[in-house]
Image (tube, rainbow, N blue to C red; front, side, top):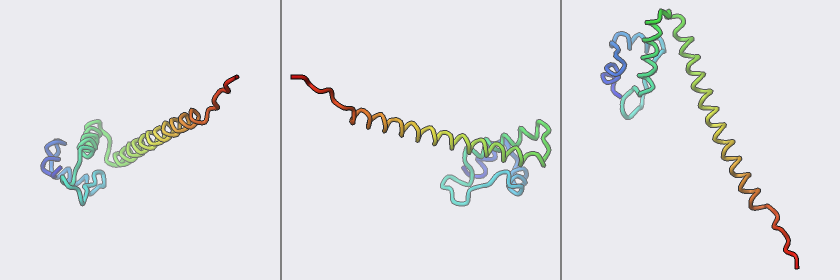
Length: 107
């Protein structure tokens, strides 16, 4: 999304956006078709704004953002791992069915 749309969606002033970008709290994308910001950036901006309203100081914000980023990374890793285990389990179940010995017929 374009910067103007982002500011409206995040209910943010341009000066705050500039400060947050300078601090590294928000990182606009350089080559992004729809503009430098995405929906995830709106959520991040709202989190930063909420932290300020809760009285979190500027020194603590990057620590909290880093922890949130780690949490999301771990969730993505866990989701990928579970998908891999599920695929692996399905594959081994299929192999077991195919290799299951057939009962001998008596004559």
